[in-house]
Image 1 (cartoon, one colour):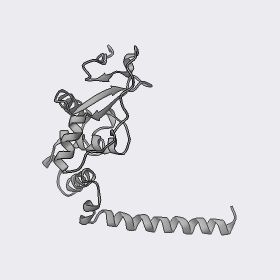
Image 2 (cartoon, one colour):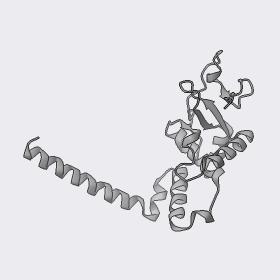
Image 3 (cartoon, one colour):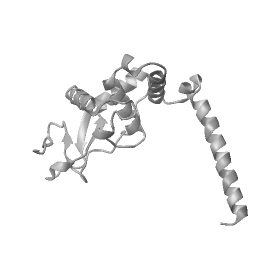
Image 4 (cartoon, one colour):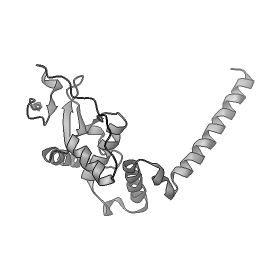
Length: 174
């Protein structure tokens, strides 16, 4: 690399860092939440609150889980059980306990990853999504938040967990 291109690259990196720092400072300002999607604003406010106060004062794992699922689905991302609760610092055992309850109450569904049966994806049900939208006073997306479940086949890995017509996920013996 020539000295001139090295200097240009260094200047570009410095400009990028300055721009990122300025953006970061603006994003930390109290008024930023008004520019965000309501769910993203709620998540950001919760993280800010946890920085200012002891995390042990506040706890609402079920709500954090629902907000994370809504954000992931809105962004077109699948979220695995092991990824839920990482950002808010919810222990995996707590996540599993709340997922069971949320699934039983019809707010979420689970789906085995067809490529890796050890992994299970979680998403909001239509009812769970509708209720979150009503809570935040936002319109429901006209298109589905996630792709439709795969067509039924003899392969049990493609089954939606919690779907009464689909086979339940089997747990492996240890």
